[in-house]
Length: 179
Image (cartoon, rainbow, N blue to C red; front, side, top):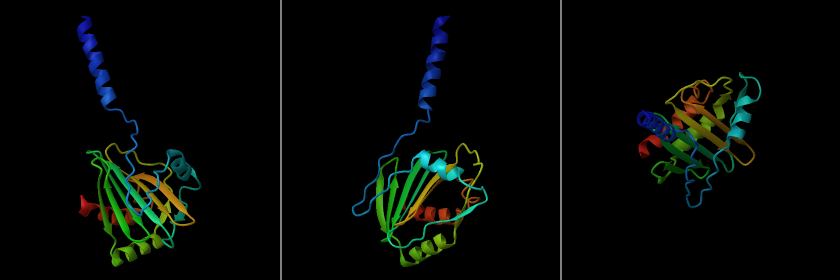
């Protein structure tokens, strides 16, 4: 009688351990000449998500002087992890976090103009109650220039409502051809 109960408990423990959601810090990719900013902590993101009126709009940092855009797309059914870093010199760093495959590219002049124009027109709207989605992609977006830093984490159901749909779409198109 004890043997079947023991097996059930053992199998349950194995399943629970293998399905845990403990955060695993991916290796930070490096690229000669490009400083990759560390991933934002949950405390910093919580502060941004809880400030002000939910309908308040915020301008994103302008792409002037030295700047960097960092977009990490993770999750989905397959549990992917892609990192895109664009710096003010137009360098593009693409990293598959699971395989640690990294490639470097350069934004075209037209892509750079599109990106600058997008950031000049996009307005971030605070989401007071994020959508719940089990197998969605999660987008960690960070935009910095010499004087400002913007960070937000949203799932694929919320980035459109947050006013970031056109920017996220543009950036994910830069990821798609490489993988």
